[in-house]
Image (tube, rainbow, N blue to C red):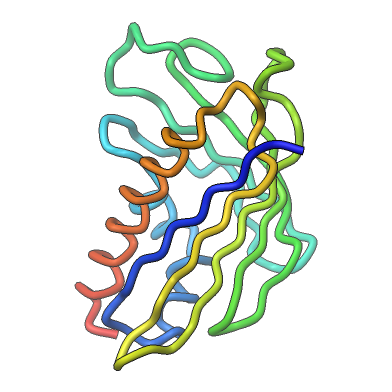
Length: 155
């Protein structure tokens, strides 16, 4: 089993507002992307058992992605959706590199706190080719963008 990363972020909005942005493919394309990359949501069926596929492409064309060229593509399914409480996804990179292969579990746990929501992001079973500190860095950026997006909506 691979490494696990955990990142928390407070968002000044209700758990229901945060949940809605977690399962909105247009919003996901905006926030679930580290700096220096662009996102493309290929499919996103936000229901338990529904599938998704997303590509993240480095802005720098000479960067090496996990899938092809400068792109990381990952796909999976929604394992659990509890409105206002949690989103659980099971995903894997589209790759031929054994160091990047394998299913990962990604959890977003929402807890109401102090007039907002604490989001706990847990990324389990990272492939050995993904450095936990890099994964954590990406999570921090993405959760920061999630907070900005939800808070800007005034929800």
